[in-house]
Image 1 (tube, rainbow, N blue to C red):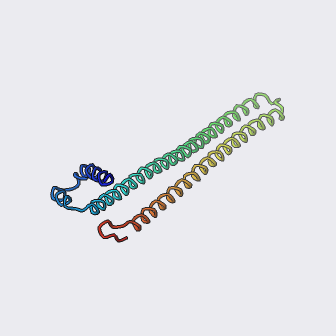
Image 2: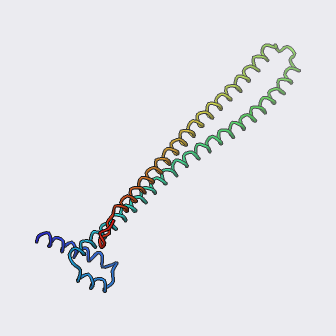
Length: 192
């Protein structure tokens, strides 16, 4: 009796929820249903709610994964932009250095014409200092490029791993839903 009363109470609560989806005629028909048929309808409704909850969870998970992927892609784009900015800045500095060296060379030529006594070793030292500065600048640029390339590769690797994981989860969930659908029993016919 207690079980029957609990079932009747649940059915009353569920009727209020299910009344939104059913017409008045269907409600009149259900008053003639047996307890087994009512239990079957209740089980069917529970399965539908479970499937809807699973779909909602899958959608939320997919949205979270997409948002994470967008974040990673934005990070890659930022790093590439920074690298391009540094390359552009390096090119500008090279141009400035070339202009500076050209003006310095002209100045040196003027000074040489005025002072023939300038020692050759001083000019060689100045040339070596300038050449050293150029080499150091190129090394710094190459180091920065390799560092940003490593960062970009790392971000791409993480992105690929996350995409693979998302695909695996999606496939596993799809297989799980199929397995549930295959093993579900029709409440009216009792067939699988």
